[in-house]
Amino acid sequence: MEPDRWLGVELRHFAALQALASEGSFGRAAERLGYTQSAVSQQIATLERIVGEKLVERPGGPRPISLTEAGELLLRHADSIVARLQAAQADRHALQAGDVGTLRVGTFQSAGARLLPAVMRRFTSAWPGIDVEIAELDDEEVEQAIERGELDVGFVALPVSDAPLETSELVHDPYVLVTAAGSPFATSPEPPSLAEIGAERLIGFKAHRSSDLVEGVLRAAGVEPRYAFRTNDNGTVQGLVAAGIGNAIQPRLTVDVGDPRIVVRDLEDIPPRVIAIARHRDRYYSPAARAFVDAAVATTRP
Image (cartoon, rainbow, N blue to C red; front, side, top):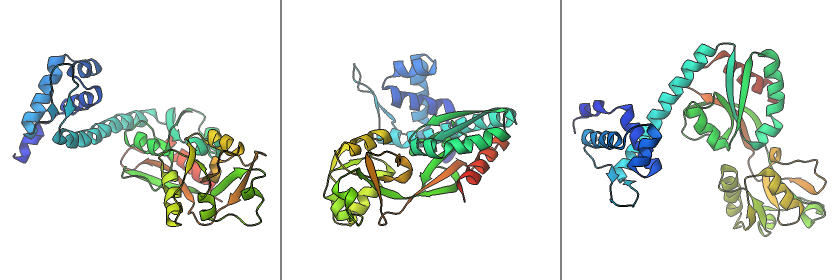
């Protein structure tokens, strides 16, 4: 393949590949894109001809189509390219908005409950003409939404993935043990060791950076964590701990420390979670977005 043949690849080819991978059939992909089925088929055929590879397995009959290994590889690049186009559209909107318009802010549960209110109070008093739209997602989803241009700024937990983000640290959030009031861990004179904690059932988060970190620390201490229940809802975790179903190791900001049903013990063997405010480093940085980042830093730093 001569590299210059790839210059014939168009965004509509990538859009067709994305739709096909998502929908599993040419008909549904056509409905999603507003094309005819033959148009989508032609775009995929053109893309295969340009790259010189079979990208789609077409089993025929009622069986869904699937991407070949080459198709999956190209799809990853297509996702990034289309995301940059979406970001460019968002930049144009931000440039036009000026001091009046909408600022899209992403947050996750604990940042939304503990950090966002004070930041919003400072920001909205200085920028009353900006409407702030809040999206609550997992922190990793916030990163992805910023990369796609769906959010202007967002709260994230460091380190971020390979998304092209610029971040400003806000707070260091220590991990704590949360246990039921009256339990042996609550009344012991010294905080329990990781080995002692790991010997009991845990209430934990589903697959997530926080859970990965906690499990890695426990395994390094020679303990294989055993879970009674896993959820990404902070309130559910705390309720199950209060009921004595298990203990939890979680960042302090995820805990309602005023709940009399639980006791919170400090842990020194787990590095704290670092929460930051993030934006896309290659996108237009509107005055409102810059002001929101400044408000977040001013509100959370000593």
